Image (cartoon, rainbow, N blue to C red; front, side):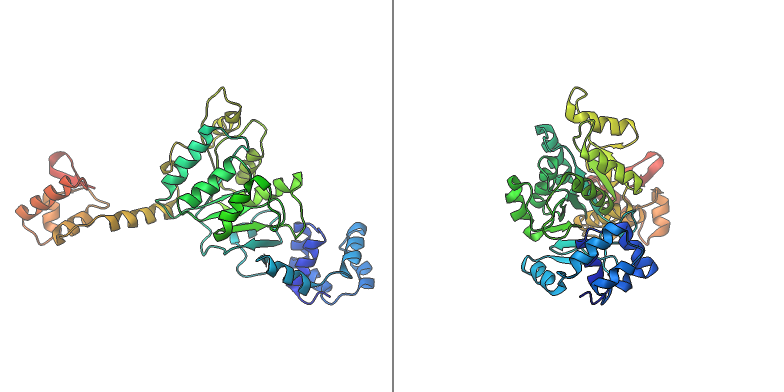
Length: 359
């Protein structure tokens, strides 16, 4: 028996009713007709087609929400539906949003600082090096990494994030109790303290089309997608295409023009993706990350003298002369010159022409 709205969405997901249909049923209120429904009543639900009604009739008799929830609990799996308040906003706003998200781990408090990193399963040493370099540099910022738990670039992205103590999210093309590929078993063990998500109900194998569905979630979770290595026809390019459709940024690592793994990324750059050589190329465009960086930098700067602190603060957004500083502070010219000398020695400010100073 279906007892409430969440169970209705769970039931429809298990019956493989499409996300779009479930969302429409929620928005127009027809989904409430499933609560406490009996098998013989399904024929009257004209908003389902014949095939869907047959599936619902067959599945309703065996549907037991308590059994399913107990099984999910035994596997440490939870789920969110589109009617839950804490459903991820950046997924809710995309076309064909997942009606339900199964997850293992904890959803982060903020979801606006996630970078997707994707690429070829048969990556090169250059691809691994590029991922390690970018992710290590990103460890200075408040960033999370999302990828698809595949071999190659996905694997390297998750491992680099874990090594650099960056939160990472894995999006699966199967249900969460299935570890695919098996050669990533060690990575799944390491992901115990991270977050794994899927839109697929239990006992769903990773068939080909599921990887395409997965890719739209990867791109939707992120403010941008970084493609590290990709051939001319690649699943990573599908992720980049989704990112564009979802109004997200697309970044690409350039590669050797003779390498197959670089054909896709170089083409992305030709088509307008931002060329990435280091983490700065990414974070410079993200305002809140820059603000966090400034705070971190300020915490790292230790100025013992009050005059040095005040003058350094004055120069944050301005170019000032010695006379300007004198008018803005209670200090005499001699004290100001000594402070400016100290700040210059610490390479915190620059002396410009005509006795002007700036950060």
